[in-house]
Length: 327
Image (cartoon, rainbow, N blue to C red):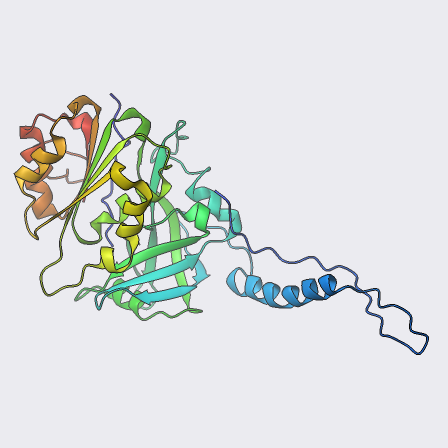
């Protein structure tokens, strides 16, 4: 059983294409009624097209003034389309992606080794955002299918000392934001597995939200999320944002969601998720902070490679080929 393509970086906490096209400029000659009562040749439809053109073209130019192409190693300044405060600590930011770069998030996406994915393989990606004042960057994973939507939606948690997060939380619609990417996090072919188990805390669920948004509803793979609840004094952003409830509605009984208490991942929860499954046909994706990852699957290597499989998942009989660690 082939495993998902490994990620050398962590989980990076954090279709039809809706393309705005510059309108055509038809040669329209408006004629007004005269004393000879000659008919007006311009129709209401043509007038409507002209009105839409006056609105759509400035919007298009404002969002994509020079059709900048995204590149993994070079920053591109884009315009923030929307901002939403999901909780006092979490903000959702919508960033329109230039039409010519949207395929990089889908049909033209590549694995980490730059090879082309096989049929049925889904590539999970992240973007880097910079703080222009301090020239530092942080990775963020879109929680949606960017190629389909034309917009990258990222959820950013504001933490003490997090200068990029502070910068992003201060942005408004129409502001400029510097991003580079997309950069591949990992790739997985769900058709090769009977079940995919996803284990996460906080914004570590972001790559799993992207995976589920890209996964066709026709997939027969069983899906299981183990995601920790927030502390009692914090709001549950993944619910208040509507992201997780929408996916539950989309997949129905195919998707099981277990919410676990804050802190270490209970062994009983992992045993329950694996019960009755053929472990050779299960893929377990783990996106946890280092202190929790160590007890569940063992730490990642110093170079952010996978490292040996240890911890609870090893004790439960899983092989390294069936576990992907994301920090």
